[in-house]
Image (tube, rainbow, N blue to C red; front, side):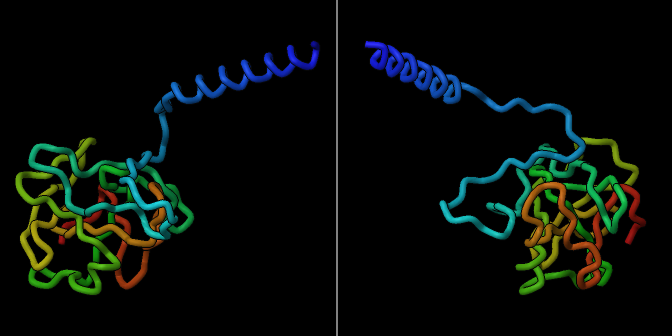
Length: 175
């Protein structure tokens, strides 16, 4: 009889625990690193960020945010996309030549099909859009913005210094 009661009490406890877990929702507290909203993906893990599309949302939607990450051993305020992934600029870009083709496969451009890009924070520079071979690419102070396919999660800046790409900060000089 005691074994049956113990089993019923244990079963009731497990049901209560599972019920509570199923109803819980994560809370979003303050954080120095943005939390990404990851697109649904297949059951196999991917070494690249879940970037369903680097295309930004329609006009009037904030497409650039800021976050804090470590760049070359120093804490920096950086520009990020809506999912919190670090944005980069390419020092080899010119007004008539940008990273495209195989380069853009590794460094997906931040695109905005129409409208004017906005920011969630006040920025000292200017956001814009430049139409190039990639489409309507978001720019900051004239620099086209890119993501790095090897940044696996929000707040990483693993592309810093690779092939003349650098983390985009609010204070980068104009192109």
